[in-house]
Image (cartoon, rainbow, N blue to C red):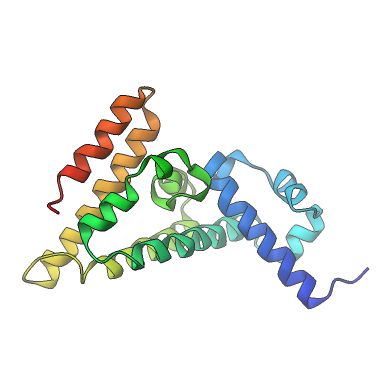
Length: 183
């Protein structure tokens, strides 16, 4: 049975949404094409019809999708302290599947490389663009360094907080970065 263009677009959307969530939860190599396809009610053939480049194409597009959903949160921040406090929350710490792409996917992306890394880089660059008007600094270079420092600080704190097995230590990492940005 031939799939309509609308149904094909809906299938692709469903796969990207599921992949974005599942990659953050299980890692890029933590879920196979079969499991992912089944999670949205498709066959392997249906998957490859949507992603002829295979898993790398899917991972690249899913990373882009993950950044797109996170960008809305970053764009709403009016200041760096507001962004930092909004990012370093218990809810974000506990919510891998809806959280930021950086702490959830950076290690996987570094191992995967290729177009997946290109998509990740574009997401990071977009975050930097959002932060540039909010950071201090006299020159563009100083602003760039501060924007990069914000990203590295909050994503690093989140990554470490998720990795440690002591909840109080996790909270201390988040608070240390929150307290490092003047209100």
